[in-house]
Length: 196
Image (cartoon, rainbow, N blue to C red; front, side, top):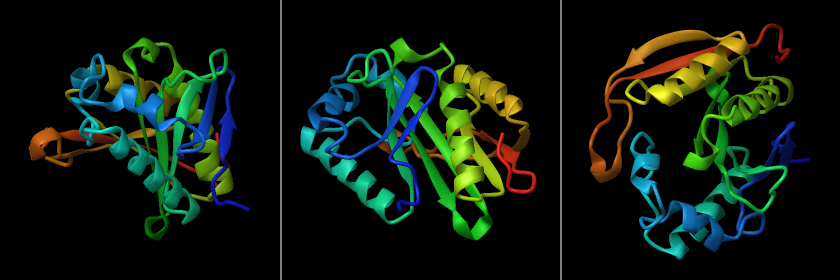
């Protein structure tokens, strides 16, 4: 049995393990390439740069597959259930076994932002972190300059019983290698191993 589930289903979403077999690398490249519409706005607060070539996207998916198999991280392609071939974005869950916590992240294409997808997938990943992986804490790191994401994170972490954490200074590296501004960590603690 794999440590992480290969697929998660929510009311409106499919989350499928990101591999070259579960998502066409050329399709994902269309949304991650330097020529993708809105890519500069999308990656402004993210820690990855646009992909330079389709091979870079293929290699990224292969790395995701390896991390999944080795129990290091689960990266999922997010697709709407009504359009399962449409890439809405990606999400991930990375356990820190030594510190009894897991961190989740997300990026969504602009057309899929602001409709509650972030909260829906957060509930699904929280169940995995607490119920399946037995993590004591779930962490989300967000750039405080990214107001829409900060509002979303506060909302869904509050719903999960979370609390605000501390500010971080220059915790992210953005395109071109420049340090990012402050960040904020929100955590949800599992009580007795039970999830939300």
